[in-house]
Length: 316
Image (tube, rainbow, N blue to C red; front, side, top):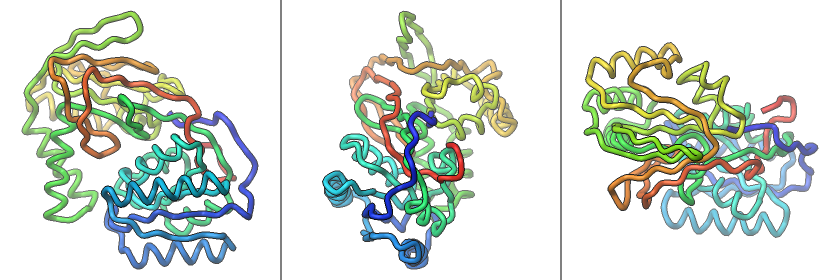
């Protein structure tokens, strides 16, 4: 979970800001988005540069260099884009302990909203100058960071189908929702896992394991579990084999933010656990991106690992 672990005063007016902008995120108009960001930073008197990026290896190399430059000059690297862009920049900022800013431009923006960062581009850009630094906790699946969630099984199938549909019909919220519903009704063949949680071994037959360390997303899934999950912990949802009728019931419970009480879901909170399967590797979804992970899978949270610029007027 994100949390108020360490607060610092407002940022120095001399902090140089590098904005890594993925204007292709969500349904963003690239030219308008860039103008909003640059105008707001200029009006705030910031020292900044904006680098428009294309996802892929070139983006990773450019982002790494920007983070290394910021480390040398005590600067800020801001991710302007969706969950994939933010995740990439966050991983590099964690690795080098560099201050990170966020200008959200994705579909759901859970991480930014959890930290009260404005979803309006101009307001989020001004926050890079007017805000303060807060250290927040992050999650890991093996050696890969996640800020919102990590999952495997049915959710991997759901995300793959969603991306296929978005490539045909556009990156809109309604497209994402409808694609998710179709994938849910198609289902997932159950598989066996063994979870090691502390000293306990849990052997389960499942079609999905979903792990979230984002309080806002968790509150949208189950309000009671959100209240019970420690600030620096993870909530784990294990879905038992389900029928289409079970899926309908789960969707309704999700709308009511009361998923955990369903008999087809097992839920627990922890700060670390491992998952064994019969496979040597498994496709996982990490903050909306499908990645191949070696097994066993190791999930853990790291307290205060990421420095983020948050609004000065609110507690995250």
